[in-house]
Length: 200
Ligand SMILES: Nc1ncnc2c1ncn2[C@@H]1O[C@H](COP(=O)(O)OP(=O)(O)OP(=O)(O)O)[C@@H](O)[C@H]1O
Image 1 (cartoon, rainbow, N blue to C red):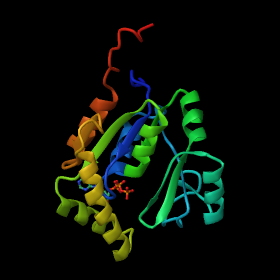
Image 2: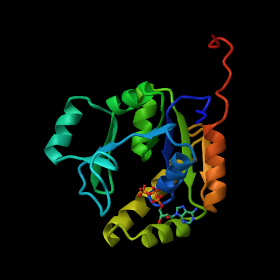
Image 3: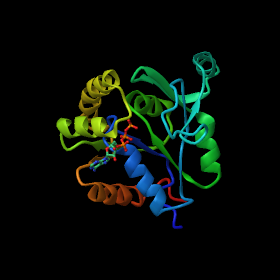
């Protein structure tokens, strides 16, 4: 497969239920052996169908705390009542294999990656409207009402942050999934910015 000319990690964020997972999956299906989704650690319990080491590394609360104190994570965050984190090693390992790393994370994680100095590209996935987001989250049927309320409250904060100029390199409104996907693919396969001093 043709790899993207820009090999920097792609950070994909957006409110829960907006379609990040769906869009990432389409990208991976269209370009096999090209991308690697980092596998996050989480303290939360697996949902039906989720696989250890594939969907997440499911760890106990005490194991998660000790990973934090060992400075294992490039970003970690408390979200929807649970902790999630991305280890630095997972980015290094996948990049070493020649894959372009994709991180599907939420706002606090985005802020931490930015602060870490990692050179990445930032994509924000936006719902066409708040009502649509609520509908998608409910129809997915994977969260209890209480969790849905938490995610919707958090979504308001995330959408406000995404309005800050310069935070994201690309904002995609995920209305029609096919159009959303085309925009994502175009962005990911864009030429890297030309920096005359950096050209070797
Ligand atoms: N453009 C779209 N139009 C209609 N439904 C969509 C669209 N994109 C995604 N969906 C549906 O919305 C639901 C949420 O999508 P998905 O699970 O990909 O969201 P997510 O952003 O990855 O959420 P989370 O961050 O909670 O994992 C799914 O049921 C998915 O099939």
